Image (tube, rainbow, N blue to C red; front, side, top):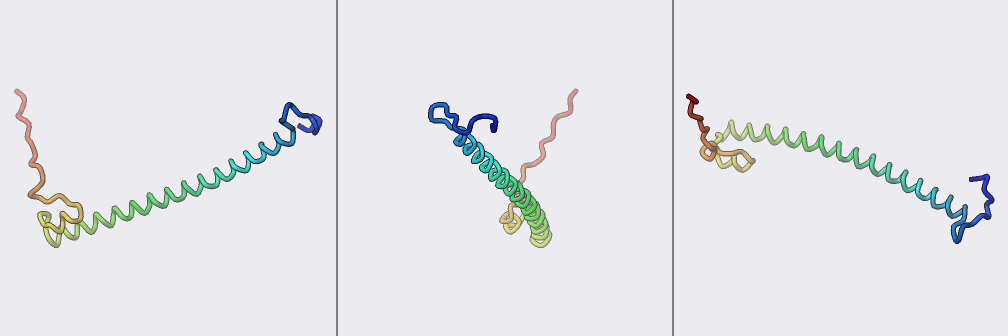
Amino acid sequence: MQQIDAGFKVGDISLAALENATNMALVNQEKINTVEAQLTDLRNERGALNTTLWDTLKRLRAGIKAAYGDDSSQYEMLGGTRRSERKKAVRKAPSA
């Protein structure tokens, strides 16, 4: 762009305005890249925390199941399906 006269204009568009808009777009893109990297880090952290939480809940549910039984209301309170409420297995008739 330095080969073009700095005073050159097309209508109300000047070389300085074009350079200014380009620089602003580059700055905004850099901000977006930074925020996207932060968002990726937060998503990874959330995933790790959710995995830890799920493992903790499974261990707690297993402890409640051992202490109170798998047909107890305590087991159901932690998200377990009580033994008395489970569907019975359906057996298919053997094919001839």
